[in-house]
Length: 231
Length: 231
Image 1: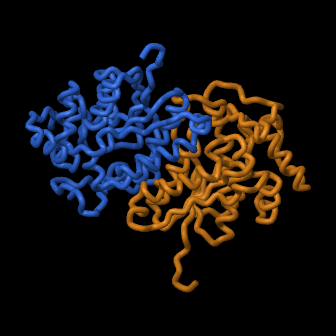
Image 2: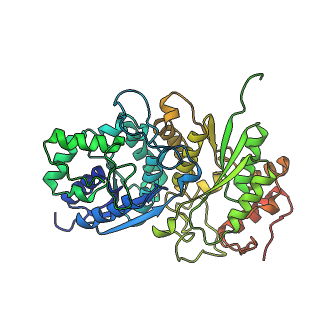
Image 3: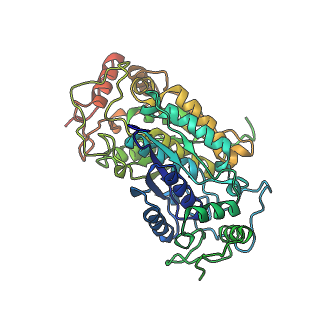
């Protein structure tokens, strides 16, 4: 398309496998990727280091970390002084919302992405929410993403002036095995990613939390070797 | 109403006059007020100090400050290295969005309020957006607040479980003079508030930025003495 500028993509990158695959998909579609990590008071820095590795390995134009300290409002095993459950996988479709749910986390992260997309101009937002999270976390459902996109149109100068700010969640309907296969196809180095809720300072996984169990099962079902670094 | 628990209100408090009046209205309706200030990289701390004063003077149960550093994404005279316009009031209805607009600011602040409301349980959100801002800032319009409320229902554990999280913007259709009168009626000490975009370290106002001009005009039109501390 001669004369068509490359559209920018603000991609939320957590350091985990889902957002890495999302970033690779945005790159595959030719977007200039501006990777964004939101430091919301996680217990350790290893996921942010993983996010930085992922952004660099997959060809992001830049990577920014915006800090928002959610520890002061508490309410989650990931930000407050609550133990992460181990060896007790969350049951998809159980209707139970896991204790690792961070109140309004995706709303907050998408809001910050929206601010950056508006500053960059001509940018869409990409995030890695998917069907597995969908089963437990309210802010990982398709209707949530649709509602956020409607909000984005009303919230921004760009939206008011008629621009489109799309929110892409390309993994929405994929399970972990599909995501692993998609990452394999796109050349994502999953050894660089960290999914564990309680990884150590070197980014090595516990192998026992919900995130570790789901991830390991994904590789197994996809028939792929699990490249995760366990401690 | 015997046996009815007091409903909690998370009130966004900036330190300015609008959010002070909003807090007083929530108190008047009998709510237990949990005041929230979002430190988004403002140039100085005097507005946060004003927010703390306002919360204490008007009887909030507690006041939390959540920091989110929007300086790294830039794009506004309030967070980036851009001069605040002086003696050139923004014209309401001009269709021009002021340079003091912070990209996605209200979306981000409401998102954090939503997270806290969810942790507290049985809490609504109150914010002081109003008709004057409405004329220039996209995220101060009624349709924006409505869209955020729809999002809140989908985004949260409480919403999924059937709870209502209302977003109240009681000043939406009031101009600055009406707000000044309402504050007078409710006993708000406007001398404790800071509206200026470039207040000094003691919270004294410049008298020349958009925020100062609108505020002074509000007191004048309401026939009230202007208690603002100018430098």
